[in-house]
Length: 146
Image (tube, rainbow, N blue to C red; front, side, top):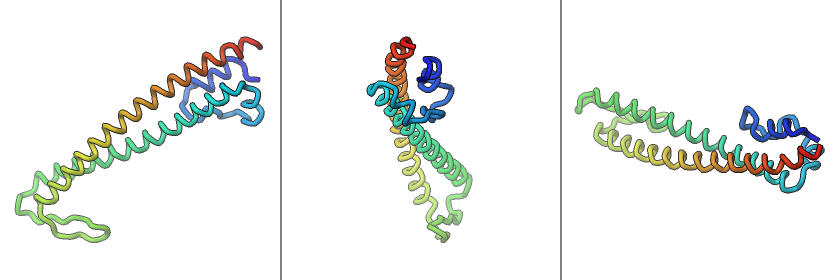
């Protein structure tokens, strides 16, 4: 059986993932009460969800930055400049106004996605914290029995 300190490290440890690192799941988890096992698994699921959300956030931020840089470069060009748009492996001549409109729409969409992802991140972080707190409460009586 893990000591109280070892269980605390697993729950609120220095890193988010993985919660069960170093545990032999079949042996160690089976010794814990079912409600604690369920909370540990829920915490691990939440942390995996958070990791996925953070990856999405990074991808959206990178794309938004790229769109903003493209718009900034386009603003420096003359209105009658020849502009090419990449479509797959082809470069197709296109109208600057049309490309600017498309890029601004894409940027607006990315800003909206970024906002949604930030709200998801906040909600999941809150759930992780709440689950960690409940696990801590569940473990205190278990660890005290040793």
